[in-house]
Image (cartoon, rainbow, N blue to C red; front, side, top):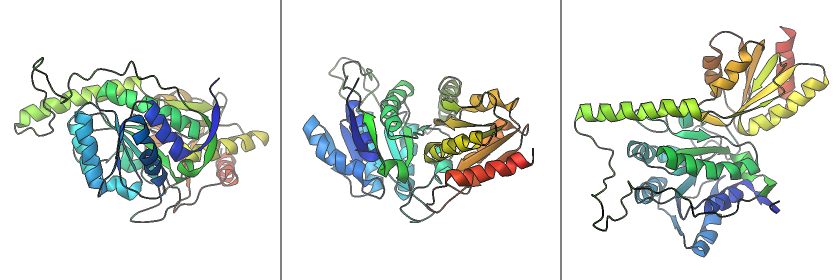
Length: 353
């Protein structure tokens, strides 16, 4: 068994990226993710990598685009306002079909808001990461260990589908410390990237990385091709964890840090004889509709718990499609809900069943 070490979420994430073959990091400091960049600044020179603190978030994401176009495994990290500044570059990455890992350690907003944990960037991550017709893959860990595990998956999925991937963390997961088992470095089987602009050595035609298409039919055809790939991803890459859903009459749906709280609330509810379960989405895009679909027939009600005014609840309602009531409970502004608060929300629903 691999040795377990106690690490802060942000630092464990950075070390996992290095183990996955990331050798280029471009970023800009912003709380509560600055430890990712600080850790990379120390580690990258020791692994023959590149760390560069850009002059802005806009510059950082465009450096990511350049490295990705050359075929490198590359990463950037930021927190909510910084991701907003990167949005144009993320759209360029998607429009150029380039894989890259983007970390968002969410903080409260809008505007500068506060530096405490939040989940109010859900819409941004899953609906409006940038302009135009595109999606990115979005993964949501709920523990430091899962953050480590999902980093390697994120790089692999990005390479497989040639698209950006976001790990949607938050200030709680980024700052907390937990024991983790770090992956062993195995970089011998990284996928070839014959499309990369890394020098043709007179052995192949020139590769061109571009997101500009002057002829409308050409762009439309490319978008249809890209959306066919998105449908394939929806069919094959949905991920979620279920907890005590087999006989659950009330199913809580929560991701990330809120899911940790909600799991404790499920245990409290079960201790009081309430049939409550939990669905924890791991992929936020594609949204794991299949996991909700399989539980709709037996569930009497759903409760979405978030650290926001209610964003993922829209996806839960779309998946349920009016067949069952979908309630919402959230705390916002950087306040983390407690298990007791979630249990109270469950009891209100149970009282009306």
